[in-house]
Length: 206
Image (tube, rainbow, N blue to C red; front, side):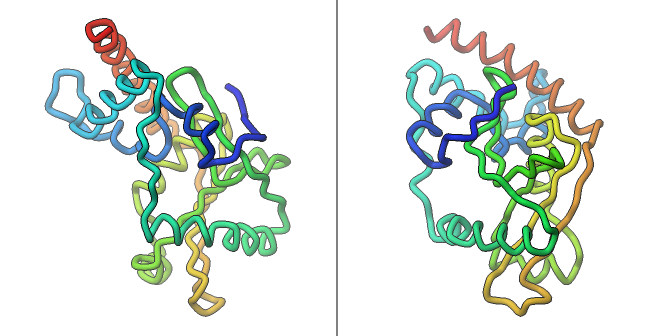
């Protein structure tokens, strides 16, 4: 396990480091039960061939061209973290990437070093108010937080939903999660299968 504190997310170095790996943004596909004998679903196979391609070519796919939603999220992430820090009297450190091993890694939105705890920020303007009013989080965001815990070895993670234009009482919503042993166990099993299939593909294609 290696924490890359000095790498900037979105940089060429960051893209190269995460190339050929399973990362938190696609973690949920590992949990889908597929009809294939491997147990993996269609989404996992899509990621399998992406990882294989990146390893064979040595070049990351350019999937970070951005769109209005992702750009809006990136622009407001620092505001969310500033408010979260003020509310909780903590210091959130930026980090580029965490390598669990040669196949697995994640890019946490922030790390609270003294608490060994991470944060994930989601700016979802179309869904934010519903998430706040119903007190419910998206399952894919929960999975990403668990994947981050698996990668870092931490046992706690906060999921922050943020909308800068709403009134103070509803602009931020925080969900706190503990390490989910059952889900982490499934990550471990599915990534072993993924790794075996990956090696087979690379062996045949090389």
